[in-house]
Amino acid sequence: MDDILYEAAQSFYKTTKYNYKYILGNRKRQIILTVLSNRISEFTHIFGIDHLTDTPLVVGKNISQKTTIYNKILNKDIKYDDIKNSTILNKPILDSYKNITQSHYTIYERILVLKDFEKLLDKSFNGQIYKWNKNLCKVIVNKKSRYVTIDADYVLVIQSPRDINEKIYFFLFWINKKSNKNDEPIKLNVFSAFPDCANLIAGQQRPYTILKGYKTNTQTQENKIVYVRPGYSDK
Image 1: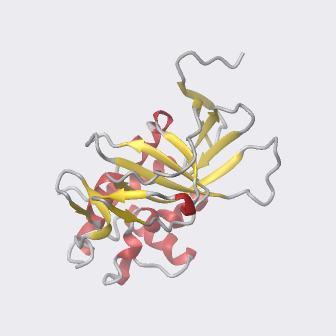
Image 2: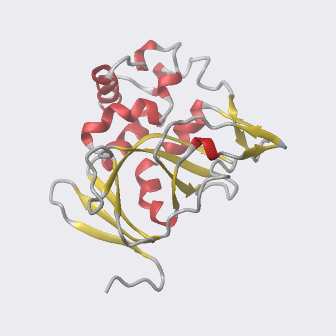
């Protein structure tokens, strides 16, 4: 039987070997989305595993513990069988909205969608990047307001490959904000991601236009152009 927990960790590991670089519409700055090996402690939070509080085996209290948990999953010392009996795993996430069933998502579904983490990020250049301001949220689900209280600097929105009504939201933290200068790239790190059919960016400012995208090997620094917006030229 497939182990979706291991598949998720393996896919996440592959992304740690690359930087995803985006040249945006204003042409003045370059945003670099980074998922690096020194951020593997974010894995349990990104995939929602931190919420399984009834399964202490996968819940870490600090960076060291979270890193250890991730490595154990990657080495198959912790498996899906170890979390499958969690009562929280399939419990509805009340603030979420799933269009097909007119109901809520679960942590299990979040892991199931994100287990293709690398493939999703490889398609991210066809997505949209917004500067995030939680105070501007105007999310409406079934005629009711929904408040998104996530503290983030940017959000990357990708179309789900499995449902036209579903988007996958990657919330990003600006890691070099204090030291950043106007002529330097903005470096971002994913700290949370999940699918949702609600329009979570309702009320936000217009998205940046992604003009060009690179996938950069963090060891060789080799840049591979993976996306160019039709009609765009940087000459």
